[in-house]
Length: 154
Image 1 (tube, rainbow, N blue to C red):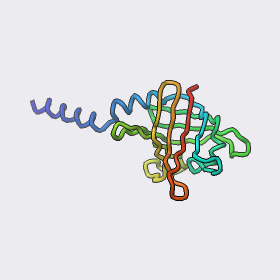
Image 2 (cartoon, one colour; image 1 turned 30 degrees about the vertical axis):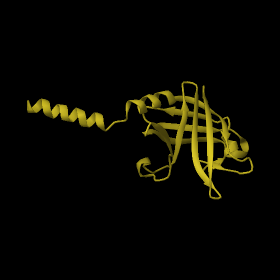
Image 3 (cartoon, rainbow, N blue to C red; image 1 turned 135 degrees about the horizontal axis):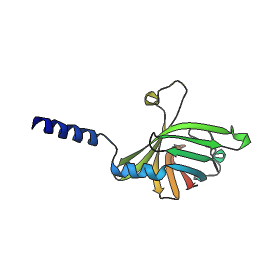
Image 4 (cartoon, rainbow, N blue to C red; image 1 turned 90 degrees about the vertical axis):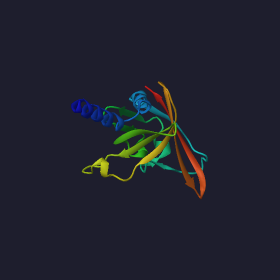
């Protein structure tokens, strides 16, 4: 009897530490190749560096790849005046009060990603099999400054 109780306790502990069913389903939907189609800023007069990388205009039509079983990904920029190339990152989905948040951390050579403190947390506003929208809420001159990022699945 003790043996069965220990097994039952182990199963309960292991299943409670994992991601929720909703988070798992969201990760499966995100998995694959996407194109960043549009970035909406509250003002066209402001230049914004996205993900501490390059100007938002450089991201339009960039290709994004998400792998759900190891939470790795990459995006590729194409514009010649925008430091073209591929950037690798780790990503995660978290559910908080029935809202989903997307976390992105750049991979840095020689740094364990778990020890990397810098990253980006964006609200997952919309997601289906073909489209995805993120929103990053930041401030500019002390006022709210939402940035909406739209993707279509390839």
